[in-house]
Amino acid sequence: MPSPLPLPLAARSQRATTPPSSSLRGWLRRLALPAAALLIAGAAQAQGVLSIYSARHYPTDEALYAGFTQATGIRLQRVDADDAGILARLRTEGQASPADVVLLVDAARLWRAEADGLFLPVKSPALEQAIPAQLRAKASADGRTAWFGLSTRARVVVYDKAAVQRVDVDTYEKLADPKHKGRLCVRSGSHPYNLSLFGAMVEHIGPERTEAWLKGLVANLARAPKGGDTDQIRAVASGECSIALSNTYYLARILRSSRPEDRAVAERIAIVFPNQSSWGTHVNVAGGAVARYSKNVPAAVKFLEYLASPEAQRHFANGNNEWPAAQGLSFDNPALKAMSGGSFKSELVPVSEVAMNQARVQQMLDRVGFK
Image (tube, rainbow, N blue to C red; front, side, top):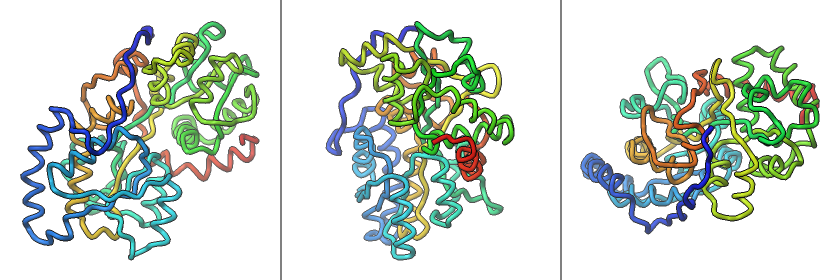
């Protein structure tokens, strides 16, 4: 893997008043005409405000929100909470919910909301063309789709390059090898990021082998699961353990940082995208849907289409260190490029099928004692 250093500073957080980039402004100008027609075509008051329930808490998204309003005249009102809080609120509000668009950051939560009838399936050729089938909900018999992945994050292996050989951690299966006893750090097994990975393993190797693999992970733990992905990365750099799992955007934040302590971490660790010779590295999605009782469905669909546009997809990559969900897009994030060497093979199993394994995986975790 090419050396990740030196890398530029992370982009500063952009507030709602920050003008979008020139390429994004160009796309927004093209968006303005159909969006303006949307406003004129009736129900102008109803179309004037779009209510967003969002689990995305990334300051760099503010430029996207501001740009959409600038182009369309549609103001955005946001309710920010975590995924579980948003779903609980939607269930409580029922038909009285003011939500038009729901943004969540995990495939299992998107699937759960779909199963609970919290989304309104829609037909959008623009979204279907932009977002690969494996990164969105399975279409219904009438061709409508409940939710779409809008960005992805790969779950990779971080290791101490002074203590571990890359060949020993280049697949997820190898993390359960007894040779790694006392070496592994990981956050809670029940966290959505891990549940998603474990659910993908069920699809790849079957439930029996997945449970045996999880038992092997528990046997190899250096300490009880705790903290977030950034804590696991720092634990590897400090020598508390020598192998960990992390989503890529946490790593990119460290690689793009100028803080001396982050530079020291970047120098100590190495990164591998697992299973490049087999099914590919696991990816999870952050995605969006139209709320079940939206009063502004055409504008809600337009907003999701906007987030799937090439310029917005590049903004997710360059601004928030996420991989674009849309296919074949170039971007300028040096940390993502340094991690992957420019590209990597990702798994093709549908994230909706992975999400459906969540309950089964949780039962496995309970049986093997994975906290």
